[in-house]
Length: 117
Image 1 (tube, rainbow, N blue to C red):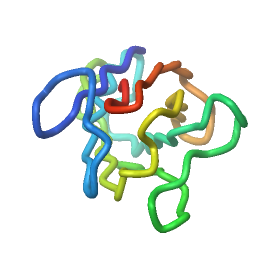
Image 2: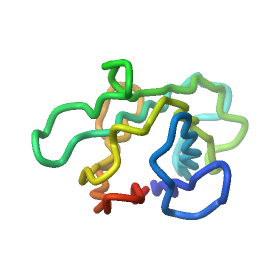
Image 3: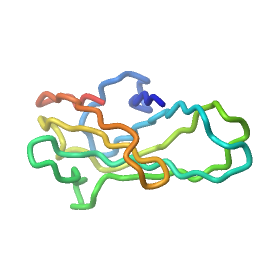
Image 4: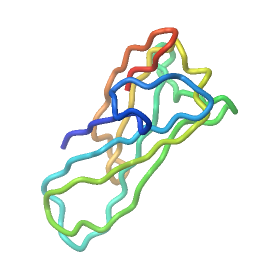
């Protein structure tokens, strides 16, 4: 299993902290059972506090996608769209879950102007 997160606007691995930010996280998988339903869920985490990162409205930044595997190997995209001006300068990580099991955790350094995905 592997994941690749990019800014939807630029396809880069960095995103400008802004009023509306969309992150596309492509999760590549192997070993699934064709015809079975799976759920992939991403949560952005604040690295300093180890708590879920919050959007500008104070909500956790999370998204999930439920799909039926057509083949044992493939990919699925989880899209996170949120108001993200307040994440500027934060050190974030992304936690990915697969059917409620933690798949991977990624650390992403940020700068005052950019949020690393």
